[in-house]
Amino acid sequence: MNNKKTFTATRRRHLIACVLALVTAVIMIPGMTTYLPFQMNEQILLPILLFPVIWTALFIYAYLAQKVWQPFLVMIALCVSHGLLSFWALTQGQG
Image (cartoon, rainbow, N blue to C red; front, top):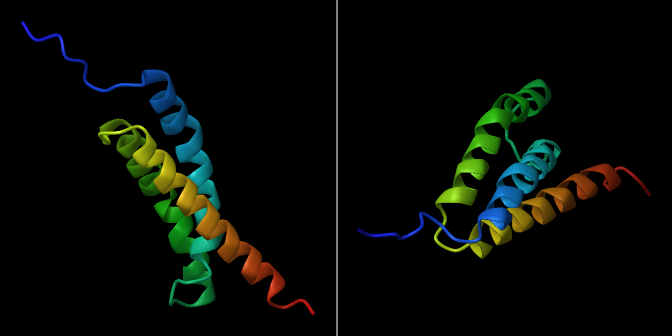
């Protein structure tokens, strides 16, 4: 009988899936409004409607990835890039 585990680093995967996936999805919402090529009301509506899909995809990816560091790096990169896009959009009118 094969006793191979489904995945390794269970605690880290739980943390990444539950906390980091939620934080990443929340940070992506304002960041997406800066690059969507729609009218203003659609730029705001689409990320809000996509929030459950984004969170679910990141949550599942945290468990399906071969290595635990892969979803961690992807989610950190998404957080940083969308955070910078949001910061850029907020400070663009300043000065």
